[in-house]
Length: 166
Length: 238
Image 1 (cartoon, rainbow over the protein chains, first blue to last red):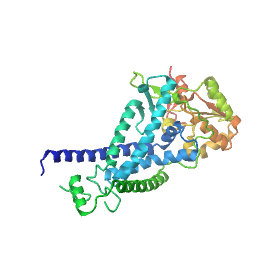
Image 2: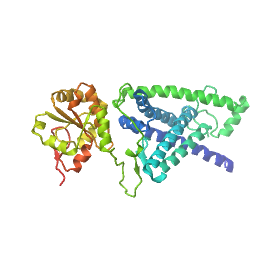
Image 3: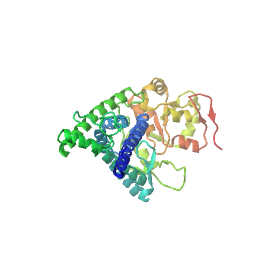
Image 4: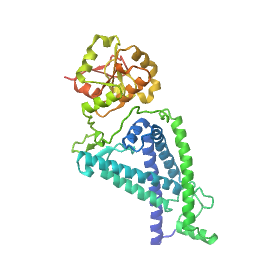
């Protein structure tokens, strides 16, 4: 067993990456299932964002997004297509954080209260949130997803990459 | 120590060195391309999974249904948000839109608003017992079971197929139908009323009680717990 300091550091990083992958996967499974099991509540919350007016599009988002999160969570927990899944998480997290921020700013302006005092159900699957805490949480999730996308978290994977040559 | 996935060393650097001895290391561009293809694959399979799961789930949404019929949205984030107050039990406290705005909105949809005292009169009217006057609770099962206006029928329009067979004949014979939900910013009573209107119930019969069960409770009126005509009443608050 290699006891050199650099190998300890590397092993610790590898372990951290695997834990980060599992953390992300469990979080997405939890949030996705929470929404998927209460689709009407999620539909109402999505509607509150006023991003789409078309009923079909609105239903499509509310019906499929939670299950898609569950799917990505399953891939990550098993370690399948890790980088592809991490990229999908980023593609969900970044715009979602942006619209949550926009909504919080609108509430902040409408109620004339301090920004960090804004509290609402963002449809994240975790109930009512305090905006500043939520933004920090999402920032951490984005960083972790980015870390996995860079190629970390490849240990204890069923199939790290779907591409044949890897 | 081996990783179970590739059989390479668990240390990625060592693994990468081994790989690089066998073949040319992939360039960043190639790697990025692979990740993009992989994410596309994840997106396609994930979407198929999501559609299938929604279709199979008994709670799944019907994609072609308009769950918010006649909805007119305006930016009003304050209606569902609350400032963070020191109160530990603080939850979303609904702020109802001004009554005149609500009345105008309902009028635009061909519906009428009923006030608290009118609802109480209708509830005490002998015609209520004869089902000439009918109350419709537009909330979900859980909220209905927890407490509803005594004798009110449940009609959760998000799952209309479960209730239409019971509710439609009653509404067709009734002369006045009072639809309510939680109150505050709850719009489900409006949507349920519009759903009934579109299903063929004359709009002149339909009244929306905007105060909802919250106002009913506040006024200390009796509440029925469990199913309709369960006989299980929560006494009126003093």
